[in-house]
Length: 441
Image: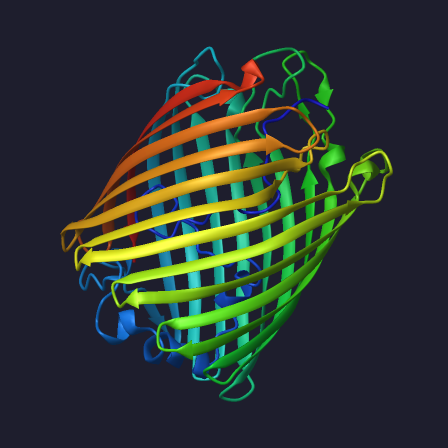
């Protein structure tokens, strides 16, 4: 199987800002996905009655209303809203192979997306479908097309109880390209993921209990190599089934705590990948504390233990944590800092994953009502599990979002990455310059 640079099995970040970079992660990880679709009336009410930041009118820059500059969507019968969008971007990357010897190229992307959302009194349904065309000017063999269909639903049984779930099918491509060499993949590696989740929440305001289960199948397809052979990626195919429980309690306005537990079963779909079959057990506890309505701190600590079926693999356990500080010094300025330690899983059959220590930060400033400036930084240290490889990476970026009106937005950004690895093949630095235009309804 051709070597690859750690394709993450689980999503590490989700971009929630208008800019191109990811915001610092929130502290809680277990059950975080379910909060996106398990929101009862009591849960919605707690966002204002138990959050002094919102109660006193203070909010982060990204939460500002921006009336007249955000899409309204198309109103449909039955309480549904349709949000179509078309986005075109160009990125010049001076090191597309993330290699000590740089090779630059211009990457152009065209993305079309449709979101259908309903928010009825006791039900919620959201459907997202998008497609993406990626083109490289000087390396057409790396071109690829992606697609995604995702749905979320919720039925509120009464004011405090709800059931919900999500489904996703996605064709994505690993764009961590390796340098041109006979054994390396000569194309973006296709990764097809199917995921389903279901959950239940009981929320009476101060106290909430959520439980859920999920199942994910990942299939990684073979691609040709530069040497003319076929790179066998089947060792990366796997099934992942998990279940969680989470209990949250609000002590008083601005103070809350939670405990959560999760277990997973990870099984390779091919016999020659069975050495990575494992059970994972994870526990977390954390709290959220407001020093005042403009300064909020949250912390999560836990332990994760991975037990392999094969006696040839060493079981692995480690403490995990995430500390997040959010500060609103002025109405137009938001500062976030996050420090964490967690395990990243890979779909590369020859490498189980990494233990990552990460420090991230974001400063957002409302230059004007429709102009947003963002500065991001990240420091990360990755220890590859079962090997001596250690990577140290720092990354910094700046972006500017200009909202012309409710239908048109422009983003300009720059990002620099620098990595030093004990394996010299993985030491590199990279500069990316991006311009993006988005048309929305």
